[in-house]
Amino acid sequence: MEHILVDTKDGVRTLKLNRPERLNAVNSQLSLEIVQAFKEASLDDEVRAVIVTGNGRGFCAGLDLEDLGNQKASEKTRHETLDDLGWVGHQALGIVQCDKPVIAAINGVAAGAGFALSLACDIRFISESAKVTTGYIRRGLSPDAGMSYFLPRLIGYPKAAELIFTGRDIGAQEAKELGLVNDVLPDEDLYNHALDLAKEIAAGPPVAMTYSKRLLTASNDIDLTTLLKQEYLLIQKCFQTNDVQEGVQAFLEKRNPVFQGE
Image (cartoon, one colour):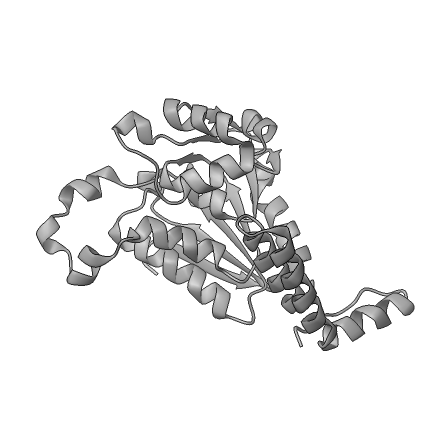
């Protein structure tokens, strides 16, 4: 990929946004690559967990406004004109629908759609020096990329409204206090901390891990009875896997299980 550095090791795929000179702001090419990268990670059986982070001083500064200024409406294809989700919508769905747990390592500024990218992830860590912001209102814009969906579900409507209506900067410690991130790490420890957790997740049972993510994602929008039925159906499917037998045997033998995803 042109603007994403991809590395896979020990079941963990790292996606590093790579436009450091623009704080990894999203141009037309990167917007396509983000969606493709998560699709590939979801379909690859060798990948059991995903980390997304940024190269250089930024995580993702949102839409590259200079790139937007260089685009002309006449250059759009018919498909792009008819697409009612846009790249921001496909980005949000691509991350949420990725069947692998996704960890965001927010290493620098995360603004607008870049902040929303992190909110779509399952787990978020932030470096001490990083800041996040909804940012849209500062540019005369309303939210996109799932911001108005993820933010109130994470921190409640009143606080989400404040952050969207003001577009103010949020430091790492406040982000943790608000519940936007799981933890704050020293800058130099951020990626390794995310990697350690990703490796722990990658060692887990892949089928059960995917079902767990699907249930968590569905819990935002369905009623309890429906979710209980889905839980019951999926745990029965888990019982049919060899990984459950391995988990039980490992417990009896007092050793760590080795899950194969079968």
